Image 1: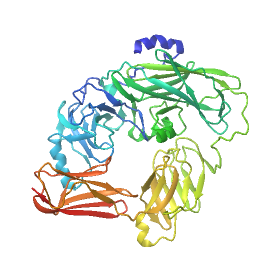
Image 2: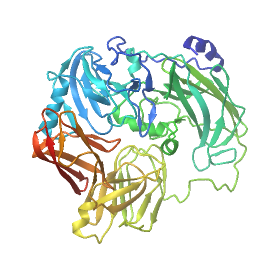
Image 3: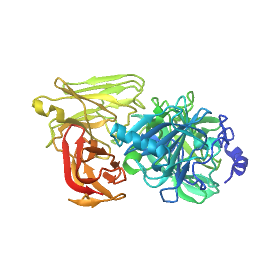
Image 4: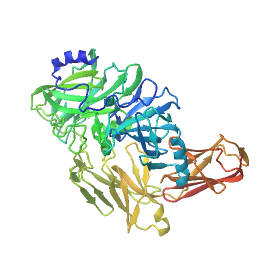
Length: 577
């Protein structure tokens, strides 16, 4: 449904005070050209919910192939080059005279002269991974200049171009759609279901302390309805599973705007326009974190918790919490829009419960050892654990629970449950675990292991401080100390003993580490370091022979080190033609 049709309808639900297509700031709409020479179809929108972050740009589909030409969106200079096995993969940053920076990520290859400049830096630094800031006169570009070719490098889940626009001075990321990039879209968002969540130990929904899912039916146009009239006691908040689609595009993308209102009062308003880069983890406070981490489901919370300082939410506004007097009935309106003004809406009527249901056993608020406020620093310790967390690292008040479990097999400390892994934190904090009796020769092999919400294990390194092992961590949940004495594994895929290799041929290896994680990998032909490319998704290291490869019958040596210094070496003899 197009914006003009919605405008006529929205008077009936009292939502016309809400701007459906956003142009809150005057951005230069015709300054940038498209980075690709094909119509823009998106597999990811700005501000959509991702694991532990907001998506900070547009994911532009490349017809499921790699190698499409990528063009500079405007004149400027390359200000940063980043090459990584993870994250953005191969990425170019271009600063423009108008005060904005464009970013092009997951690139397969670079075009000249950028490609030669980068190749030289690989060998100067003897490193595949690069993160280099450039001076303005090093690599100037013109508008429309071919700078690279699209790919699937880094953390990409399939061939596409990730494209961003940032404020050069502040590095705030801005919705690129504000700059005139057009996407065919006459399709309104889908509202799949609503969910009411009790907030606090006394809150109930229909006599239960558990969340209640509310099914919806699409009745006419983009109107969704329900016959449910839930009874609530104490504060509750609303969640919505919603997504957007574009014309001729099957991908489910994030929505642009969510508005919850009662009458003329706006209770909650999310709008994906712009955010500071250090705010990206506030996505964990905007989403149902547990649903995302366990089931990969995007559910938006219509609730601004006390520790959620995201600038995309109004600073001085209601939080979205709903509380009704006994017998009171209210109707709440929910509006969801995409960037082009296509909108969907629904209503939910709620009634205040007359009294609480007694003897409920469903509450999670048990064994509380401390109440922690999000805007205050938090120091906590016992005989075996110390925790130091800065202020504004929690998204909401934490009713802290601690539990100690006996030492399991193959671990040399007890398991310490630092509350629950289902509660996210914003930034790193220091956690220390006390352990004695370890021989000095093994202290440098110690790692701190976290069991995450999905029961996976991740390890971080740290430092010993007397009997305390201290590490920087970014999550709650179960932690213990372990030793990593096992070197990384190197699996030879196709390197042949005494094999002959000519220009363009490739050798490959699979690398893995059991706990601490890979730290470095170095490949040598003879005594000469060679650039080998590591793909973090497949854990594959590849080397392609070129005209610059050392020639002759040479030893090929691959040295792989993990984060606590365990080393593995693979060596063979090859003939480089």
